[in-house]
Length: 166
Image 1 (cartoon, rainbow, N blue to C red):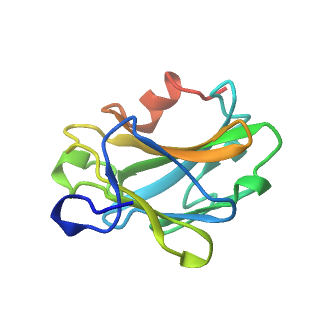
Image 2: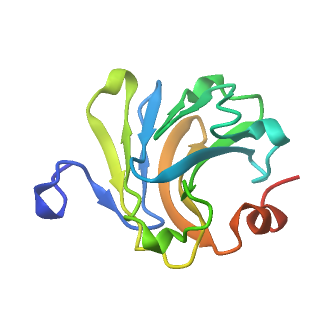
């Protein structure tokens, strides 16, 4: 695994980098002044319905839970047909662009809070108000994590109009 710049013991990524994950529960953490959400999608990249949007007002779906700055994913317990969980951040204060906040830093750990598996800090956002940070996805029978760092300036309504929402 080595160390990242600055002696950080976790691998640090740039967008599009991916890494295989071990079996079992995954914990994704993004501390800071953010609302953390998860989108559950199938192979077609689309959500099956509103139940696939996991956030503070709807904190659970099969295999996924959002609790403050943490998302817990149990890939084997996701709904039938689910093949991806996208980690999404937005400002806790909806009127604030992400560029005015600290860069969101995501860490991934395995079962039981074990050894850190990955860390991702995207390039500094600008006027974006929603940022798709990373995704946990199935490739064959294995699960991987991939850095994304794709945002929108139009908030959730604009993102939803052009996204995987059915």
